Image 1: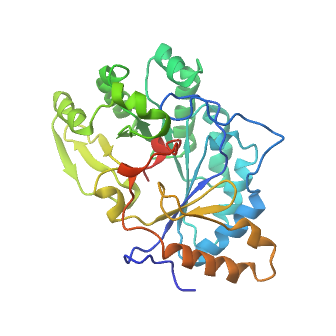
Image 2 (image 1 turned 60 degrees about the horizontal axis):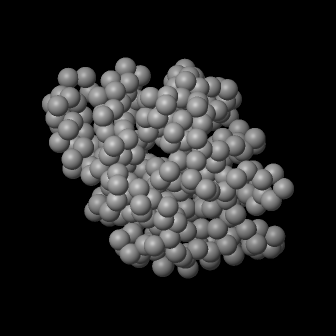
Length: 328
């Protein structure tokens, strides 16, 4: 099969898979009143359905899969999903984005199933702030989970932080110290003026330019060339200890120029742009005898509509739920 290539000669190698829309955190910039867990109204793809779809993506050149949500660790069958995906020829890396609450109890089993590494979204290292922003008084459990993931070999762990003025801007030194001590890759992701975050943006937006200026108080930094696993981050390295800090702004040139990804929703729908409106349903085709050729034809048609760049500056929807997971 010929690989998937968009109209701008970008080859698709990376698929982001939302395995559930549900999350049990209520972060103010994400899903303060988002989908609640309802066992009776689930629409998620089964592990077998996901394996079937991803087997085709792999034959079309996809090599890397990131499992996201909502919160993917709410899926009780997550290990089975990972095991099925890692068994697909051509898939060389399966990663996970999580809030980290269940890593303490599941890191070992996820690693045994074949998971490569994880990203953890964590916006504060102070318990009272953690409870306020997430709705859960569980910071110690999350920190234990990160330690458990380290021990299980789910590394390098990327720590994703959304900087917010008046909330966590005074924790920059704490995040740097913690990341250096635990050998984490720290990344700051700019808050976007979208959906539920519009009011928060007006009050709390902290630009990455200002954040980078503040970094100069914590050492001497050099900019580095992005590697494949760095996604759209602008990468800095502290000369004294090698600590890596990534800065991600979805409005930056970086974010689109090298885009090699598609997104698969929990219902089996494909988006050709993470922040785009175009979406096509693959799941109904799985029941056809010629499902493989039908899916390939639909994917290639969809890819022809992949834009050269997103139009976030014109976006007015509530599609912010995965913003803290946009990086690689």
